[in-house]
Length: 276
Image (cartoon, rainbow, N blue to C red; front, side, top):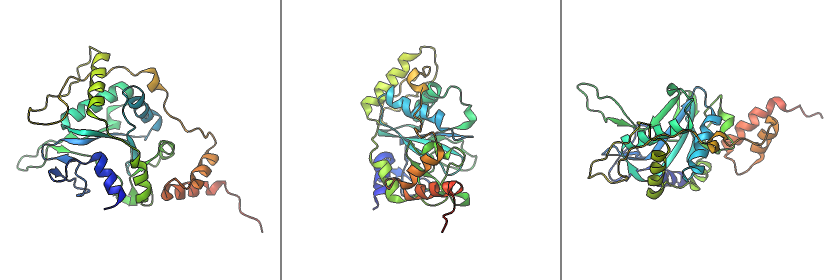
């Protein structure tokens, strides 16, 4: 069992003994048989705007006291934040929480640019698919040989135009990025819900009540307050000169090799040929 597999299981999987695997990755169960999950995924595309996404990434830490979510390029068209919960919640609860975060930190972003997972899918007459689906696990290969991958906050802005890797990300590097992440425990989740409720009495967004037999946080009304000042200043890359930034990435042995290769390729136009 690889370190990457273990880290993904630790952060995002429901109990494998009772879980339902995704179609893309049978080994990683993001949903259990009741449609509950420990992974909340927020995607932003067209474009993959880190300046906007960083408002969420920073805001949940500064305002709600949550651990940092994982950052990923989805291998297709956008960026993702992967939130890990200590206890599973229903798909409806997950949608309510994500919608509240969107309303608070991304009020100016068009809904068509956003993806919130897990989500309910309409049942087709004559078929019996699950009414709940989840995001594709990361890392994974997509059409055209493009790979999704977890990335560090400092590298996220690099992928604004091409939110994917052209080569498979290193498993050890991916595991290292996940190793320092923690799950949102029940107390923090309850505190966040209470804070969201208290911030605006006029909002109507709610998390539906779970059935009495379903474990996890109780369903409560969730209200999405306005963005705060702390959320208006996202993390930014300190290197203002692109060449210097790429050089740092290429030379940093702690950065995943695939990303260092991409940085080296991007530096080629800057490099003058050596004279003999």
